[in-house]
Length: 540
Ligand code: GDP
Image 1 (tube, rainbow, N blue to C red):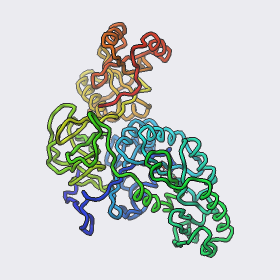
Image 2 (cartoon, protein in one colour):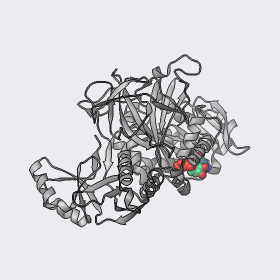
Image 3 (cartoon, rainbow, N blue to C red):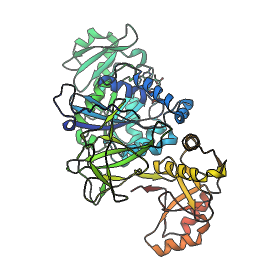
Image 4 (cartoon, rainbow, N blue to C red):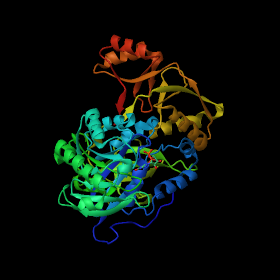
């Protein structure tokens, strides 16, 4: 990994140290193709972090070309890894956590959402709420993550703004508060009226559709609107915008922060409409770093000791090295290079020699990272998803989920002499959280569990390229895996003895019961009412 060794400590003008700027740490959630990549690019461009549209994608392509195992991404045209982009706008630092859009990787996305304070939900104006959007929204709701909605592609034909707002309100059971209003959608799109600031961003349609003049207005009745856009567009804007103002709730900070109301911004990520306004809403109303759930007590971002948790571990992009980068959300304190912290899972100290921050798309040595920031910590497998790092004191962050796999497979090795390498590779990838690994109580054939087929492809490719192990999958006799728990240790022991041939341990040595099918699962639940069969396990 090449790092820019220069250390950024302050903004280009050199006035405000980065560590004293406000933070907004957020993710974008959406259904594939709604425009997440385009919006990411557009946000970075609006903040001056990249200079040309297409730069994020172009750099992404170059990076992908360097990394063999990510050929899968190229072949399938999807993004399977999350990354982090930090950018500055005014005196605020934005940390944007990218999440994979494909549903096979939703687990990774869930974990990433534990590390943000806010999310942008991107909706395609022609499609409304799609299944993946809804699933991800539910995760945000579980954690009360406030949502800003961006209705994308208003430059194309789509549903009416009213239909879209009503759908969001109805399907997601959320109050919606439009912050701007398009004069029309598709061919009728002549601009965006800013309902917050009262002003019209005129669409210049002379050469494609691009943002043109900004006209400050007294209100939506202002006659200046009539001279800026066609008369019928002005009329429908007044009619519909007026109706919208009267029918939907006005923005309420408290309700937004509690996750009960979503501000809605109409726009076009591709053409740069509504993007500035989206940044304004995040800057003005987006939550600063929030207290994080932990034992024995939640950690307040204002605490002076450094604390953080690992929400993601990623293999180094360079397949010749076994290095891992653990992505850590800082929850309190300030990180300085060389600092010593304790990994509370193993009770061992470690020094943070080369923490990395991710400026736009560049990696730099981190210095002065504070609550809300994400840093990458290179390591050789000591850090796992869910680990807590702390400068001092007793604290363990909670709430990072592992989900029960939906597909179980036995692994078969091409070359029996490579058992050691295979076990090492499977264990490493299980620690990264790419797969679940089950070691049966009887017999020696390990079972891997994944949420989607695509993860099996990733596993196969990475074992081949990083560990030199050719792996085949065989059907497993089991379809269902559940973590088992009980308040009654004797009862748990009895279950484990009765079903010894179906017992296994996961990669963290937590007991798991493997079942042949849903029917058997149902029967066991009835037979063992004192046992909890859990589809989710907190990592810490
Ligand atoms: P992702 O899968 O959510 O990351 O979606 P992308 O950002 O890759 O966008 C999917 C497609 O929609 C691409 O062809 C984009 O060019 C297109 N797209 C994205 N935003 C807009 C927009 O505002 N207007 C139009 N017309 N197309 C858009």
